[in-house]
Length: 117
Image 1 (cartoon, rainbow, N blue to C red):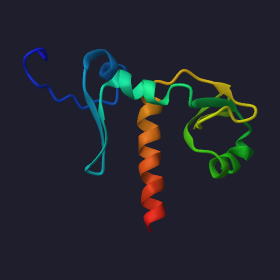
Image 2: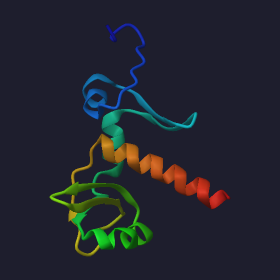
Image 3: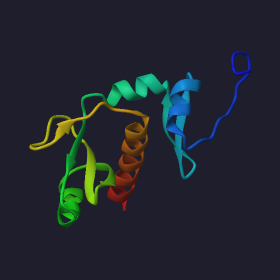
Image 4: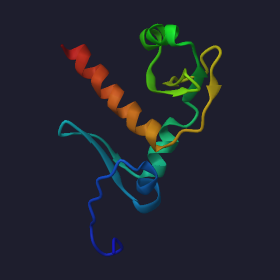
């Protein structure tokens, strides 16, 4: 259906975007934060996403000192993903995915908005 017609797909299922779309946009609060190919978006942040499991008590400190783009609990302990140009001490490299692209763009936009105020 999408070969000859423009289809607008709004989804929270990130893999659908990668598998079905040749072009995508990330829109937040009416502002287009990214427009382009899903694969290009992933390539732009490849090698810049890092992961580390930390203690819950350390979470706020990591948020202050790193660009934490996502966090999830694994067996009760937070695992954080950070966006950083080079490997921060104690972090493991992580293959970038569209979820990392999304959160990198959202947090970058929020940080820029906070700096303007």
